[in-house]
Image 1 (cartoon, rainbow, N blue to C red):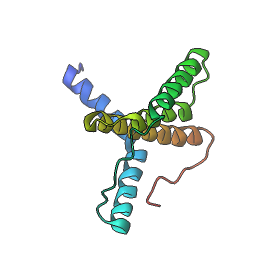
Image 2: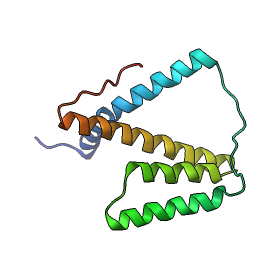
Image 3: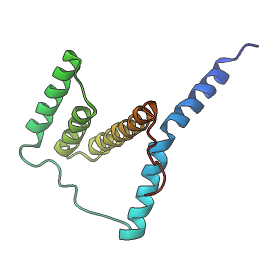
Image 4: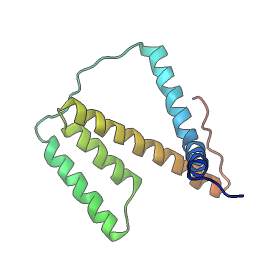
Length: 128
């Protein structure tokens, strides 16, 4: 039996969704918990403060150097994304950076679950 490109893509997409489910579900549960506790939240962004752009540049350098050296960590990747978000004042760019922060955070969380499972450790990915 052969599969069409769309069938193959659908299977790949389903596998990716399954792989992302632990952190995605936990993140949605956390957002629901925050909404229940605090209600709708609106706060000043607090970004674009003097010194944020140089810190973002430094974080990118650290990440690039570690990647070249083969020592890159999730913490360095997340630091870079967070500092880039802190440096933004443009609403679209800030949204894009915060989306990247969320994506990296969820990828890291999923990796924690995978690495723990490889060691026989179960990480509770349910509601906390």
